[in-house]
Image (tube, rainbow, N blue to C red; front, top):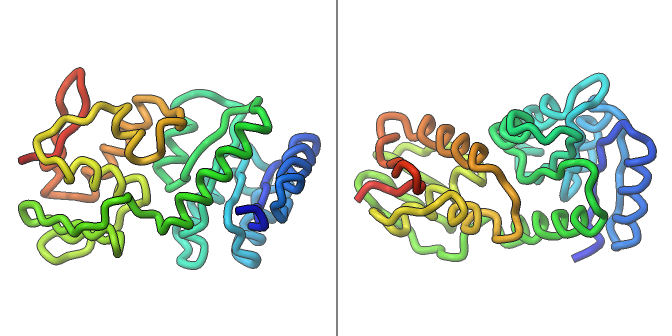
Length: 229
């Protein structure tokens, strides 16, 4: 797996050098940026396999860099792992809403850092797809995992990786309730730590994009969510 290029955007020299050291020892090629503007330029010019992105940055903050990356066609596919010294839900939720793939709260161990990098690379090498590739047709919604495409009345719906995976997990078993923990397991794997609030925000974003069909995603209070039978 090693050999991929990782872009580290971090303004703290000691943290950036520590990350660079451990990634290099693990066989990765490392690009470094000490501010958001430089990080955004390197992401466009070098197209790394993963971006490790601090949120508190000079010139452009991490959320702005993430937003730009997910809006630009050539960088949209690059996984972003947020690095944040804050543990408040609002920071995590804001990044996930913008399309970030994962987050690590400082201080973090090197083992955790490397595990998260390997996991996000593995998911993207597998094509950003859930294991089941059968096309689902439910009501007037068509979900095609092979193309990572969702159509409602033959019109495409633009979903993030997480939104698509949540919709697919729910739609595979209409009427079955999935807890938030089961949703996280289906989307990210059982080793992924996330707050209930972050899952709820992803559901809000998914419903918003489904528009008039938002009620297909039903809330089961105190339990989780299900796709309408």
